[in-house]
Length: 365
Image (cartoon, rainbow, N blue to C red; front, top):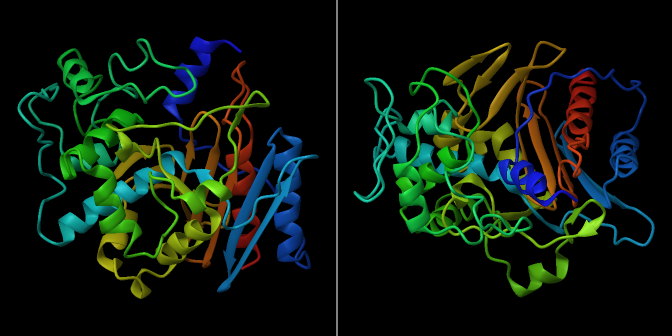
């Protein structure tokens, strides 16, 4: 495995915005059969194991599958969540906004030793960070210097962040162009709860929504239920991040928790975070070519003409995808324990498989 290439591509944990190309399943196809077909395709593409959960017509269904000799996951199996965690950070922002504690157009503010890059007359706002339109680079300056390729954020400190920001230039003026940025969401987390980001996400988002297994700290019982991450077919360690965790780089979750989370997205009126959830789903930035941004959530049209709202995620050993369509009341989450691409840059089609499943469910509505 090319270590430098692996660390660069894995640490970026890209999000996908490809439109669907699959066809709808036959009308008499059962929900378990559809999920099973998607799981089989994930294993055939190289995933050691996979779990998939869906919501359709108020019904929730979860199933797992594994290759020969591997443990079959279920709804309680713990995976690293990756960048889907950005939607939790965005929900924390939305809670602060709806509570009158801040505004979306408020400028990014950090302690004085952290210089905020500027380009043009306007300062970076919290909305810019939450819609990937800040102009910040994908990764922080200096992150990869001396990093462990299998745990690239573990060594990174607040001092490193301060030094890196002093050397950072914006590629575009804030608010002018979509460019996915882990750094941007890491800074958003720090702006909301400096050096207490994980505690904020737990108390302001996970706990109110009943996401008991969505956390950056593994409890002993979660360790017993955790899948082992893989890269190139080889087990790899989890990622650890103490500075930019608002980007989702070190968060864990389960399919059951994500289905609870997606159920709240489908029916915000039943959630204690209704106003915040509605704000995260509202389009705030038009990236062009059919892609719009909520707060963290990406919105694209389905073949039916309805809207799919989604986010994917990845760490060095895991790939995840969560999506929903409020108009048809459908949602999909998929989690596999392998990195999103191999050492040669070949993408595993986890996102497209989950998108196709959502399209099937939506078309059957």
